[in-house]
Image (cartoon, rainbow, N blue to C red):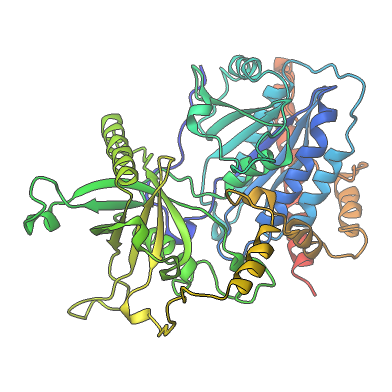
Length: 531
């Protein structure tokens, strides 16, 4: 059986809250379905990495590697840093685009298993060679297999092939089946939601199975989930509610009901993109309105950040102009340190709160923890938030203005009596507009992906002309333009008399090849940071 281990336990450092574990993507190619998937997959990958490589502030993705499996497995990209590395990633995506789309392959049954084992070995070797000053935040790897084949069959194939493989360093192994359907919600008003846990099947082992539609938007949404903070070492926040048994007494403030929640971003701040007006504002700067709640919650590594509910509000009684900053989402925690009974009870209470708020059409007003630098004051400064329910099992949190932040707004009420001519003219103007019942952001294109792609690639001809010649000199053999794996290929079991010699030769080859890759990566970083 396949036994998975979770990531290294213990609280994460505040500066590492955004960073995700290293990821290995294995593209399982089969004809003729590859012809239908190739274009959408490559476009989604390019769009995603144009965004992920450009985001300022702390790195949200650490390492990434790409394999493809046809009649045999092949490493298209060994592990590289994602941030600032779009040119190299784009070159590998371009290589996927040029793969054969017609004909037939004769895939070997062990190819997928060997891709997993080879990628895992490569990650272990990268971890051993990385310098002490740049030690990896994560010591475990997430592996995703993208396939057009029936997902359950692929899972069974992996279960059988990996049953004797040491996968302690694998944090998660996921099979994603790309279905032949297309996105049906693009022409409708309802936005596409991320796949929930209920839509993913957890089979007898810890291999996750999920399906996504064969369209660019669905694939983008899947890849963008890699930018979320998915750590489960500790719940992110405690939502404190007055106890119902003695809510009218002072004891309610000392012994509140506690809902344990995880915090998730709803949007990416435009200020994280290069070229924006306030692009110099870092995501880890607590002065930034867009990151105040997320940043302050992340700094409470010893104990989760606390939001204390102080009163309820009618949903119609909060003016939208009084909220500021980007919203964040609260959901029931999935912290591994809580037992199953506590997780289930916490989730039930959380869902009950959402239902009750929707039924009453209420919002909650909550007070955050004291701001840093004000502990010497008798009444330290705090930030206030409104908490909004939704039809999904989540709560939306937005910062709300207080007396100190308000500016004069001496606007009179709108006059009730207006000239009929003016009303008719304006009403006819409004009638000419197309009316949509809701705003669907998936139907609005800002051409941001193409802008980021062109800004990330320097038009200076071939990217690394010196690398290939160096590889030829050091490896002593013809190298393909693509970057090969940094570990020696998996070999068959040798004869007993030759085992020791082959092991030594394999180790020497792997060491030399890995050293070459590290030097190439250093040259690339120097190139991308140059004038």
